[in-house]
Length: 310
Image (cartoon, rainbow, N blue to C red; front, side):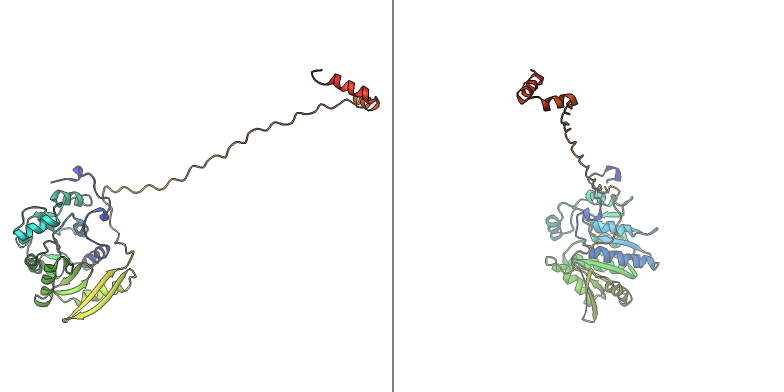
């Protein structure tokens, strides 16, 4: 296990942590969690599948006093079956628990409860009816996602929120099947959809959905559409170009960029001194009169005699 003192090359901001957690989902996580906290809703937080810790870091920011936060991931360890092992080797070969802990400790003083194990252990480690928010982003295989959804239903308190990642990605059909099966046959009610995630509840979705719609309609950086399908109201959201994530505290290793220094003014060149013309010595009055009265031939002779060097 690593500690904050042994960390190097740490992320300075949440955007520096590797992972797939776009600004829209950062906003939606924050909105759902803050809504719970403002309403006095308390309960544990759970994340199944953590990768390098990007979403876990945000979840940890919303852990209230007395609440538990549990993260479960293989972290490159032994998978429960061959298919899961192949998936892990292909997509998460660089994932290690040390990397997750290093990133998390850059933003928080203490780690959550970390389970380095398959997500099938979560019902034994977290009490039923104890959670307010569960994020599922572990295996993409149908059997595992099916069981993770069942575990989330048992863990959540009334009014709790479950978030399912990759529910409509091209490379994760198993997640799509398990997600819509839960909606159609297992009582899960969608609250909203982002590009990557489905946010849902096993309770009446209308109160939270109405509050969410009011917030979304006031924003110009989120596209919104509402559809009905199989008796469910589907609130679809998408980020508009240039959308920024909500503000988030910097890590303890953040280095603010230096303000650009004002250029040093170049001193104006000192002009070269100019030599004043030599003053002509004025001729005496007697000399001027003598020169004017004498015959020219005498005047020229006198000038030659008086010339310098003569």
